[in-house]
Length: 73
Image (cartoon, rainbow, N blue to C red):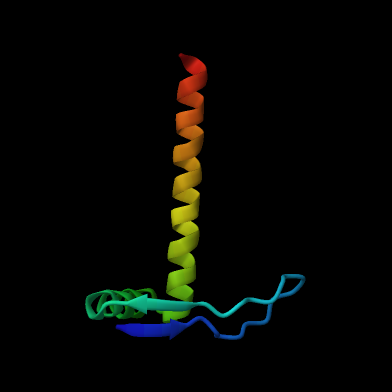
C-alpha cells in the first residue's frame, strides 16, 4: 500500500487553505495514478483533486437527472 500526502502548496487568492489528506492505494492503483498524472502532465496530488471534482460533478448530474425524472411522473 502507498500513502500519498496532498500537500503541494499552491498560491490561491481568496481561497481557503488546502488541508492534508492521506490516501491509501494498492500497488496497482498507484501505478494507474502515476501513469495518469504523467499523461496529464500534472502532479499526482493535482490528478487526484481533478478526479474527485469530476466525480462530484458526475454525481450532481445524476442526482439532478433522477430528481427531474421523479417530477415528470
